Amino acid sequence: MAVCARLCGVGPARGCRRRGSAREHRRGGDSEPDTDTDPEEAGGGGATEDEEEAAERIEGGRPSLHLAEAGPAGRAPLSLLELPPELLVQIFGSLPGTDLPNLARVCTTFRRILRTDTIWRRRCREEYGVCENLRKLEITGVSCRDVYAKLLHRYRHILGLWQPDIGPYGGLLNVVVDGLFIIGWMYLPPHDPHVDDPMRFKPLFRIHLMERKCATVECMYGHKGPHNGHIQIVKKDEFSTKCNQTDHHRMSGGRQEEFRTWLREEWGRTLEDIFHEHMQELILMKFIYTSQYDNCLTYRRIYLPPSSPDDLIKPGLFKGTYGSHGLEIVMLSFHGKKAKGTKITGDPNIPAGQQTVEIDLAHPLQLPDVENLRDFSELSRIVLEVQEQVRREEQEEEQRQEEEDCSQQAAFQPAAAPLGGEGAQGEETAAGAQGTTQDKAPGSQPFVLPMGVISRNEDYPRTCRICFYGTGLTAGHGFTSPERTPGVFVLFDEDRFGFIWLDLKSFSLYSRIKVSFQNAEAPSREAFDEMLKNIQSLAT
Image: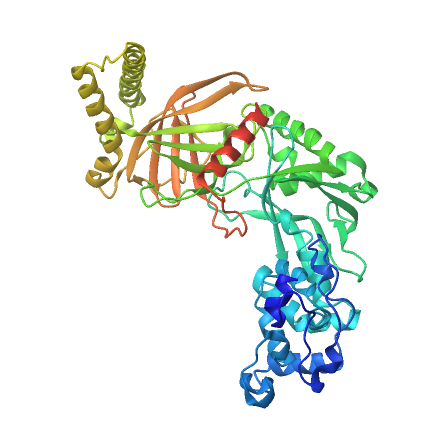
């Protein structure tokens, strides 16, 4: 009642006061309170002719009455109920759609005003970017309020970026509002080894409003067109899809035709074009494994990494070469003196969710000149020297930590000054190493891969900005015996970097995914770190 009093301009002990005989048609008591805030409750049925006409005047920028004319005797209005309907439409249309159900409970007048489609047309446009001419919906009998409440608001929690649970392979799903549809697009890397080519994408499902009752979910998998599907929001940041007509996924030629079609789409070639026997086995294994998930999938939310002015380059998603496994998607993020590359898509050796590379930004590498760089043993010597230095620093840090713990156990015994001073100096030097290196690093320096290092893409840049010591994760089939091995992180420019796997004598080239993903920002740094930890634990 207190809320009603503030809006209607009366005391808490009295009912809604009607002012003027001209507003008798809006007479009615307060609606019963309800705990559910579903936007479908904000009004019911169609708007009255007068309200629709008022809405049209507002939409066209021609309000019929001046604000001061609403009250009796020419005075300013004392409550919202004294305002013309077209002004209430404009006011209500500027509020978030999730607040309108509460507003509809104030009184029947507000509830009747909220039936005006102009309000919901504006909410669809401002909150979800629906720019289509929503007036065309009148032909099908679907109102803008139906679109907002039964489609956009109902499925708002699945908008954004997701990683499907497809064993070690993972994936990247982007759910967006596309016109009057909500569509889940699966993003695929370009065909190996063309890492600089744009991403490919295909629809997995779509949701739209066919009638006023409820939204329709359709599976888009296969080659026979849309068919019946289902979406279930399992819990926060997780949902699942299910196909109810899997016969639409099958081809008349059987599994052999399905495999050849999948191979052309996934790799852009036929099996006869792939001469490497091990690569053929990996491709066939992936087809058999992923085809088990064509009827039911679970997705977990992922966020884009937050950025900072101190980052080496802008963090984000990159596509990279991984030998016989083809191109995979990696997320580059910065964490103080470290940078991490986390797999969004993976393979039987290193599954999706694992940290494929880690860059030590406190230990830059000074590469030799081009002629000496061609000698792999020279590069190996430089990297192993830094690896030994990092190992010694880690041991010293552990020793300092043990001594600090011992000193804390002794009552009123401060840590020894020489050790404390030396430790502080060491930390300051490590923390400032990245900034100092970036300030003094040349704009570009010649770069060439050493002899014997294998690269899937020979069209890599021949100049680089700076290099850092790093480690790469290697493992046997099935993620057996995982081990971090030394390597070299090579920054070419803002959109490309590389990594030399020293033990494998292999080179991976990464190129930025230049897609503007919506609803993918992490609410906080802590939420992003928690997301990384979760997807890694699932992969393990």
